[in-house]
Amino acid sequence: MLILLQLQQAAAKAAGAQPPEAIGTPGAGNNGAGAAEKLQMELDRMQVELETQRQENIRLTQEVQQHMKALEQAQNEIRNFDEERKRFQQQLENLVQEIEKREVNAIYIYIYIYIYI
Image (cartoon, rainbow, N blue to C red; front, side, top):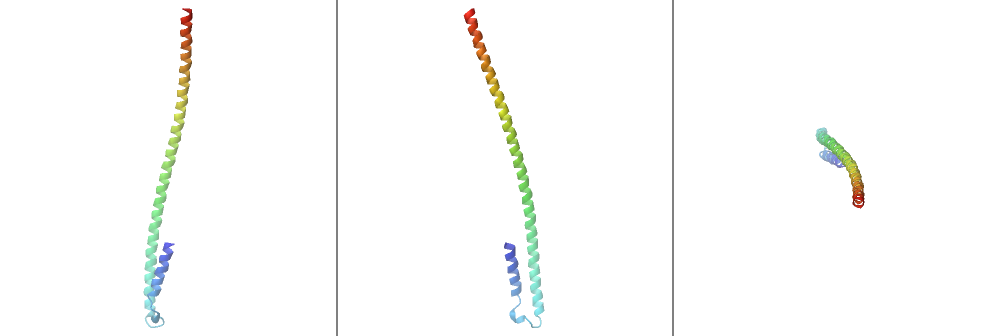
């Protein structure tokens, strides 16, 4: 939208460069040619600006894609870590249950020894 406005302003400047009284008089064609040259220079400048902006957009898009890949990799690592944590937690719970069973068995053995010995 900004570029369109700039183009319209450049066209208005170029049109304004030819005074109304010069229309139809000798030398008026030169004035029109000068305005056309100015307009062409302005269009060329805007094309360069557009190309620069396009290149910057491409660069920023690539940068965003790299960050998205890094984010996806980090999310995968978090998921893997969480799964590993859950497995470790389950192993820990299994060990606690095994220890509790052995403690109960040890208590029964102590009671048995105390009663019968």
